[in-house]
Image (cartoon, rainbow, N blue to C red; front, side, top):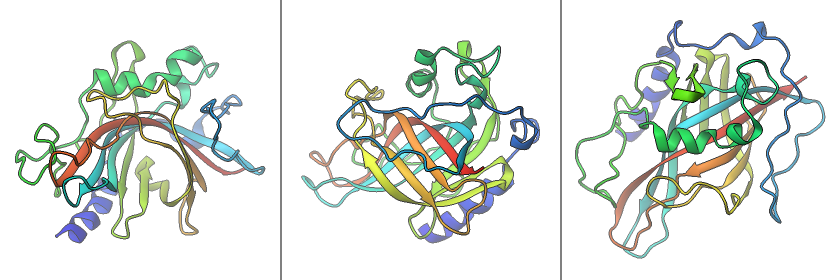
Length: 257
């Protein structure tokens, strides 16, 4: 059942995009300014962007991180994520009249997580859940309709696509109706800054990541997850079962010049 559901996710991700909700095609845009990939400021940093790659897209991901607690007291094991993605490239400081200050841009994931519902469909039942207040996403139709994300003072963020884990457990991104179709593998991970937003339930921010795209991917070859907010497990101290925690993050996509 789970494998069938994951296969359905990939098909749905390609089919759900709406021409009205999509952002302007990447190829039609004026060149972006020279954005600087965020750093944690700590002892460990993600590897730098290799020469020969350029920034293709900056996205906001808003969704859930999933975990399994095999038993009470066990360590929570990550089982993937589900998220809707929105284009924030033109909000980068200096990108144009609608761009944000550096502070507001870095805080965008935390603002979205704390001021907007997670745009997914959730199960009604709390059976088998570690935390009854944190239901899992629907296995059949987890994604809501393709539409801009209204963030009030930040404006309406254009819809980009979906993020999920495929049947092999690999992080997958299908954006711009498939013009970005990326299956990735973790290259590096570092702890988030101590000042990162812990999320509505106070579980803490998930790690920052660098992800290498596999050879069959399209649109980008390297993805960074930065400026994370929330997403850590509730822990396994109270119950065994499945767990989901809301999170948001910036995703920076790089590809050949």
